[in-house]
Length: 302
View 1 (cartoon, rainbow, N blue to C red):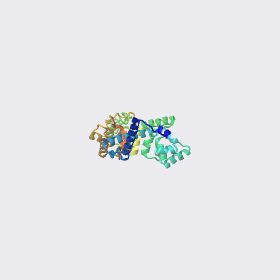
View 2 (cartoon, one colour):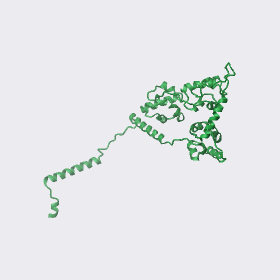
View 3 (tube, rainbow, N blue to C red):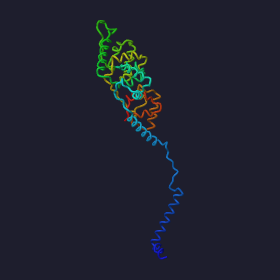
View 4 (cartoon, one colour):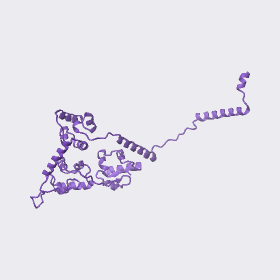
């Protein structure tokens, strides 16, 4: 008994401390079992602040995804593999046509020849042709052929009083040529030439050659002839407007934005409070992603 008694012998202060500790443990157990520390309060996920925060997170994720997308580097279209062709948007049939052409020991030496062999659409050709890289000797030969074609395309201007005098282009830059220059192209009359110049003014200048195909009523073949003679030598200087401060009527002046899209953009802007990056426009439901590169020619996010 003395052995056990020595272990359980405490003075008064020690007994009081042990008793107080037991009381605290009991109280904590009661609080835990009665859910005193729990709360029934629910977070309102529809709060404007949370929605705006989520939109900002989504926009940052979108930017990150855009940065992770594989970039297209210049390449020789004669050596497109099945994998590369699929990445570019070509169908297996179009890729097979190219491979069959190459198996006959032939090479495509221009974007027109590439389209003729593969039969890809005009839209896809305009998308991937800027990345075509042909050998230097092919480029020089094509430039020489274009120069010869340019010399042959010089015509006497119909209203010129001196018919023996050849009409000389004012420029070969499509953003600087006049309606008279355009009338030297077969199939372009006074009305069409003025329509092209008017559309160029609406765009504030052509930034992409493919924009010429947007001129109402202009045949693809005639547009091809124009682009054989005239090129975009200097890009237009377009003053961009801040998407976060632009007014409704000003945004409607964007040649690629109609009333419905303008309304969607303003609704989205009101929802997120402020666009952190112009690429957030792609988050808008129904946004025409195929026109994104053209729309953002006139817009920025600040």
